[in-house]
Length: 570
Image 1: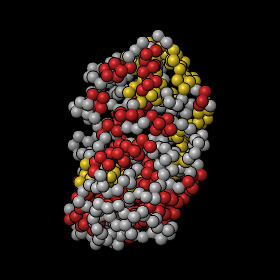
Image 2 (image 1 turned 90 degrees about the vertical axis):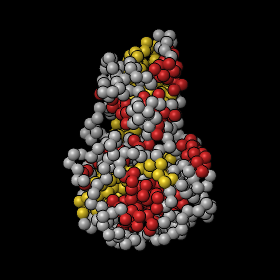
Image 3 (image 1 turned 30 degrees about the vertical axis):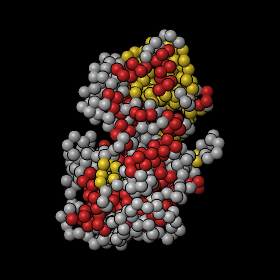
Image 4 (image 1 turned 60 degrees about the horizontal axis):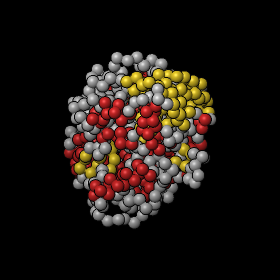
């Protein structure tokens, strides 16, 4: 088997920081050789039913290959691909020895609203400006849809307002001195700190929650706007236009209003930057100049001399999807827990494509689901067993806005104040071993110290997000736990690769984002080098094992974006 890091060293190092006697190493943990700079032979996935207790590349590859196969049809919620995926996860959890994690069941039913636009090819956004009129179709220019479940949308001659970044806080208000009720608002992606790179504004280049698209739509709805469109640019969004276009194509999924009472817009969408430039020009305005002005303190929203119209119909269905949850009960404090999460869903199949039509989602996020299975296997076999309960949740609807995790946190099997931490695994890049672990949201909580200790035991270091403007800390399921006050850990391999250094790491990361992220090309590769990803799994297991045997609770650090409820157990 391909063994990766000195896991025994990790466990003993972390245990030494504990108040209790160090636990005996689990059967899953044995001595191994450190990573060295060589290219291993391709991993041969373990045959089904012959998995071992150890965290290893063969077992991980087998599960990853299975979950990302065409058999699962892209794992889209509400399809046969979902039923096959959730059945497989449940069977694996049961075989590992987990117990059903939600009221005696493996499945937590998440209510789901499906919104399908009728005849999207005919939908146009028309803008009548003071100098000219322009029209935009769905595709390379814009995307549009409804967020509130309306079957008929008919927005006519709505006044257009440019509201900077669409942020409203006591320190910064892009809606100051203007009433946008019934109007169409256009805003920029990200937040003002990124726009002007001022380290004293918001968090400088690091994206905050106010830069997330979900916040912008909610805030516009709170302000009474009829519609909001975000102007895309790749640098500020962290992904190319194709990701937006693919994400808004086909049936859209959301929680029903009964489960998510946040205000919702009837009309919402995105414009490409080129389309926005043409729209502003039709109103006699300079988009580039207004965009630059939005970065400055004291910015005021600008009413454009233009009106927007759009009309479309939707088919609405209310159905459900499933979170799959298993757990190991704690031996001493079963009412306390740590929670590992990974989303199982992806984008399904697009029959309009020629050639490969299936979004297999090997990296995003078959890697995460295979990872929590590997870690669960190690926990299930370790002796002595964990003192706190350890939950493993494969959640749905992440690609639709982190909705499965949102529902899980709202209907948690464990009280929030009794959850020591959430460890989330999403899109683990497989690029060979690295000298560093990248921790998203570094500086937010004391979990930084836990992962730093685990990395040091492997001879590695922990570094912060290399691309903080992309806001990865706010783009995966753990943010739901963070908003509930539970410290959350989210890591990936760092970019300083053993083979090729940072230049190779950056090239590999860019290649994935450009060519495979949210595209049918995100497929399993039998030639992958699994050494780095297995090192990361061993580190995350070591962190979880320490947390499971502690009596204290990690805290948020001063200046963090989140805090534990006052009724904390720490």
